[in-house]
Amino acid sequence: MRQTVSNCGSLHKVCTLIVFLGFIHLLCILIYYVKTLDIKFATTRFQNIQATVQTGAEWTATSAPYREPDPPVTNRSALSSAVDNSGKLDVCPDESPLLVGPLRVEFSEPLSLDTVRANNPKLLEGGHYKPKDCIALQKVAIIIPFRHRDEHLKFWLHYLHPILQRQQLDYGVYIINQDGEQIFNRAKLMNIGYVEALKEYNYECFVFSDVDLIPMDDRNIYKCYDQPRHLSVSMDKFGYKLPYKQYFGGVSALSKNQYLKINGFPNNYWGWGGEDDDIYNRINYRRMLISRPDSEVGKCRMIRHSRDEKNDANPQRFNRIAHTRETMNRDGINSLVYQVLKVEKDKLYTKITVDVGKPT
Ligand code: UDH
Ligand code: NGS
Image (cartoon, rainbow, N blue to C red):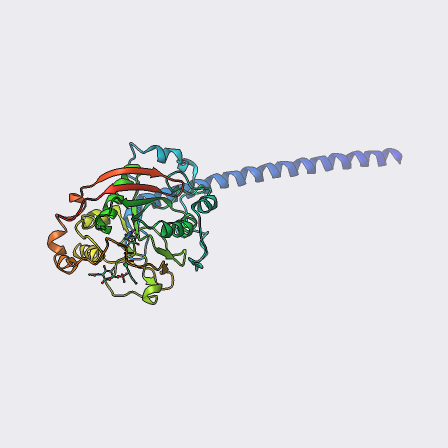
């Protein structure tokens, strides 16, 4: 009897062992299967990203963001290689998950540049930033025409750097500072910004912004679209609407191709007014359309100021904008002459001081 009980006990142990080994076997098969799936999934995702980048130039919808395939890069600057971790990363999503929407924008609190620097620890020298976790959809140079507006610049840097980072852009900020006290030339400074920024990095998109304009919604993306983009469409000073249908002043974005198609901007608008209308005409004559955000997303505030010295209204502006069609082929990026006097690299920006000459 005792013998039988002992035999049964041994049999039970053997059976348990067999079941246990079977379970381990099944577990191994399951782990192997899941791993294979994972690799397959990752490969498909990589192929999808490659396909998106290769077909990027064919985007056509008016509201679709402009995307250009990367040209073969042979001589990228030290700036690019210093931050190049793109080999291991996925492309950033079409819509950044970091956006928060409407923002409160005020200019009453005093600000110091040191505070702005401390609030933006991820910036690289020269006001450059590149997302760490994904490859930005576009490389964007932000160009600011500038002279004697340091107070406004502080606010611009304070508000814009965090916004541009949430927009997951690979961007650099260029302050193009007109030297001396000759009459101001906004459009020529923007042309210079285009040329100087391209000397540093393989930018594909150029955002031209007045120093006193701050977006009130971070969904107003500072990037390029398949048509030239006007971003400051809903300004507080105009009662949050366009002052006129053709208005293209304030903040605008053009891809390299769009900019070259219009021969850049005019160099001969000295003093206030008209140069933005000339740019509108150029875009129109090259049969492009203006892309704009809606008036909610496009809300922005202007820092109130009086007219600057040496920037009086240009009496020739009406005559000039009446002749854009004839002048645009000979006056623009193909006729740009200037001299760089100084390049300063700050954590928050690259400031390039230039001699733009004077009206002839
Ligand atoms: N800018 C400078 N320094 C100047 C002139 C212009 O930095 O001396 C730049 C700056 O980026 C500015 C942009 O050029 O945002 C446009 O110039 P603006 O501010 O003079 O043009 P806006 O049309 O104002 O914004 C015109 C003067 C309005 C006076 C209204 C008085 N109530
Ligand atoms: C138009 C100017 C534009 C200027 C716009 C808004 O009249 O350059 O007003 O000016 N065009 C001409 O003068 C031909 S603003 O109210 O912002 O000072 O951008």
